[in-house]
Structures are given as C-alpha cells and as structure tokens.
Length: 462
Ligand SMILES: *[C@@H]1O[C@H](CO)[C@@H](O)[C@H](O)[C@H]1NC(C)=O
Ligand SMILES: *[C@@H]1O[C@H](CO)[C@@H](O)[C@H](O)[C@H]1NC(C)=O
Ligand SMILES: *[C@@H]1O[C@H](CO)[C@@H](O)[C@H](O)[C@H]1NC(C)=O
Ligand SMILES: *[C@@H]1O[C@H](CO)[C@@H](O)[C@H](O)[C@H]1NC(C)=O
Ligand SMILES: *[C@@H]1O[C@H](CO)[C@@H](O)[C@H](O)[C@H]1NC(C)=O
Image (cartoon, protein in one colour):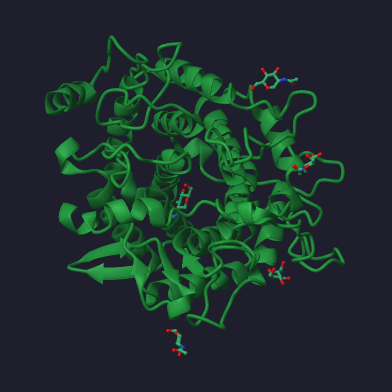
C-alpha cells in the first residue's frame, strides 16, 4: 500500500494519468469536467425521485433494508450537485435539484416533512437548509409559484430550530432529535449544533442581519464551553456528542470529517461577515489545523483526506461514506472566504482528488468509486462514495468567480425573516405515529456500534 501511495503522490505536481480508474489530469479543466460528469452521472443512477410515480427528493429507502439512504443524505446530494454546476458549468441536473428542494419542504415550509418525523434530527434539517443556502448563494433559479425563495427556506429552518434551544440541560444547545419519541433525543451532538451554527453564520452573511450572527456566536460559545470542544497541547479536538442524562459532563471521543467541516464553514462565514475580525480568523486556523492533523494522516502522505475511524477498518455506514464530501466542499469555500487559507488547502484538495479518481475502478462498469482515497478500490460503492469523489475532484476548480453571493454581492434570493412562522400550526404538530421498529435507526449520528470498536483510537493516532 505504501508504494502505491508514493507512486500516486509523485506525479501530483504535474500530470496525473493512471491506467486504472478515471483518468484525471488536474491541470486540465476539460479533464476535471469529463471525470466529474461521469461520477455525477453514476451517482444519479441511484436516484429515481424525478420519475413518474416516485417521490422527488428521496433516495432508496426506508432504512429497514441495507441498501438505503436517510433523508438527510439526499438533501446533501442535491447541494453537491449545485456545487458541481458551479465547478464545471454543467447545469444538467439543476432542474432535478430544484424539483427536489422544492418538494421536500413540508407543510410549514421549513424542511420538516411529516413523512420523516420518525428520524427527524436538527442535523437532517440542517443539511437540506445547506442545500437551499447553496442554491441562494449560487443564484440557482428559484422554483417560484407557492414555493418560498431559497433563502427563505433556510430562514424557515433557522426560525424553527431557534425554538429548540434548550436551557433545561447542559446550559443550552440543542438536542439531536427534534422529537422526544426518537432514539437519540438524550444527546446533544456536534453536527446538529454545528449545523445550526453554520446555518446562522451563512444567513448572517447572506442577509447582513446581525441577529443571525449573534445567534452563531451564542452557539459557538455554548459548544466551546461544552465537552464537545477540547483544547489540548495546542490542538483543538471536536468530539461527536455529549449526553443530557449526565448534563453533558462527558463526551463520546469520536472525530468525523463533517463535524470539523461544519465548524470550519461557520467560522469562515463569520470571519468573512465580520470583515476578517478576530477571534474568527484564529478559530478558522485552529479548526483547520485539527482537521489537517486528524484527517490527512502522514502515513498516507499527509495530503489525502481519510475518514480514519471507519475506512481502514472497512466499517463505514452509508452516512459515513459521504462525510468527506462535506469537508471537501467546505474547505473549498473556506479558501474563498478566508483567502489566507488557500495555499494550505489547495494541495490537500488536489492530492485527495487524485487519490479519489485512481480508486474509481469498481462495479460492473469498472469505474464505481469506493471510500479509501489512499489505496486501491475497497470493494464498496454507493451514493456517498460517488458524492465524495465528485465533491473533492470538483472542489479543485474552486475560484473567486463562484464565491458565495450575498444580498450585497448579487444574490437575488428574497429574504423573509419570518419565513415558516406564519402558519398557525405548532412547530411540533406534524408527527406521524411511531412504532418501536422505527425508533431503531434514527438520523445521522453514529453512536454506539461503531464507536465501541474504534473508541480511543484517536489518542493512539495522535
Ligand atoms: C430524471 O433525471 C435524470 C438525470 O438524473 C434524467 O436523465 C431523466 O431524464 C429525468 N427523468 C425525468 C422523467 O424527468
Ligand atoms: C409522503 O409520503 C406520501 C406517501 O408515500 C407521498 O405521497 C408524499 O409525496 C410524501 N411527501 C414527501 C414530502 O415526501
Ligand atoms: C448543567 O450544566 C450547566 C452548564 O455547564 C450548568 O450551568 C448547570 O448548573 C448544570 N446543572 C446541574 C443540575 O448540574
Ligand atoms: C470575503 O469573501 C470574499 C469573496 O470570496 C473575498 O473577496 C473577501 O476578500 C473576503 N473578506 C475577507 C475579509 O477576507
Ligand atoms: C433579522 O432577523 C431576525 C430574526 O429572524 C428578525 O426578527 C428581524 O426582523 C430581522 N431584521 C431585519 C431588518 O430583517
């Protein structure tokens, strides 16, 4: 494996041309376009929501079977396609994306559709809101008609989640699950709170409304004071979740790329919104340093993004198989919002992109992507695997021309600070009946099963 890595890294400065896998030349826009177009096409073979009789916005499910994808990951996938359009100019999927984002808004127009109540986490809603923000920031054509504007959809999610701030335990923050009947309601986790943080920060920058920035600050402060954040020996660790049953006095010692990614993205937006004010610049640097140390292991050359808690052991679930897509996309945006980070980030995106492309050799078509960018094809395939490769290869095309727009810089999505609050229903009213079976599989968070196996490994690696 070592020698393979070396041979992969050597040609990175110039041409990268491989016999196996998708032939990717990072110095050629045409090559990147062609490779990402193929990967996006293959990713979309999993999606049939735009066909007659199917439900727009959903990937195969429900998750009682093995080959299934939770609601949130579909939402995330549409965001990855918005970025794909920006990276390459290929708008082939824009219509499918618009249809899906418009269909899943739910009766209160805040990405809380009743069909998903039995798994509805704050994080799940956040990922759909991120895609609405991607749409607004890219000026994706608005759906029109009765559908609120892209930015109003994100505002509606914010307004809904503001009601979930919970001071009864842990001095604040949000519980993972929206509904108390779902497994995991006892936890306060990083992707939910960090997802809400990112949402608030992006709304602040898009709309210029200081209320959102104040909220982001409040969320950061709560998280930083909780055991989710740990500063040790000059490093920042962002752990996965903490338990209200113990008033958040302990923490689950697991680190995932998307947790660092969402904190990085929020901090980068706050940096940019505040015109580069401290402490946001320092925070961006600390998160980035932590992410570099943890997720770009020196044993794989130091520049290839690795979900080390599940890739080497080959036990990533479908959620986890998509996480690197988000860190990839968000590192790329960080380069634009905090320009001083660009020189550090780009080599990591490029090496990761080359690593991703060379292992897309699986499946019946001989080009399905697996998970391990530091090695040969690992024998797995799925939406997440395709999305990760698509995102990291596309992200190498990041440029100032596609910097996220705001109302002040050409963004045309119409702000509605009261979005989602005009309906006279209570926010928690649309619940569908729950069975015991439903409770088993909720949401994104990866708690016990995997964690027992890998617990403590973080400390060994460092
Ligand atoms: C659904 O979307 C795919 C692209 O992913 C497209 O090729 C296909 O024509 C669409 N089908 C319908 C019925 O619109
Ligand atoms: C909810 O489920 C019903 C029944 O399957 C379906 O007709 C409807 O389109 C779904 N709504 C959403 C937003 O997915
Ligand atoms: C729970 O934790 C919060 C935040 O650390 C603290 O302010 C509060 O006093 C704690 N409550 C109890 C009952 O220990
Ligand atoms: C904020 O982002 C814009 C767009 O990328 C960039 O031009 C600007 O320099 C950034 N502001 C700061 C303070 O870095
Ligand atoms: C800013 O956002 C807050 C929170 O949603 C809202 O109450 C307020 O009206 C907004 N202010 C403006 C000027 O839009």
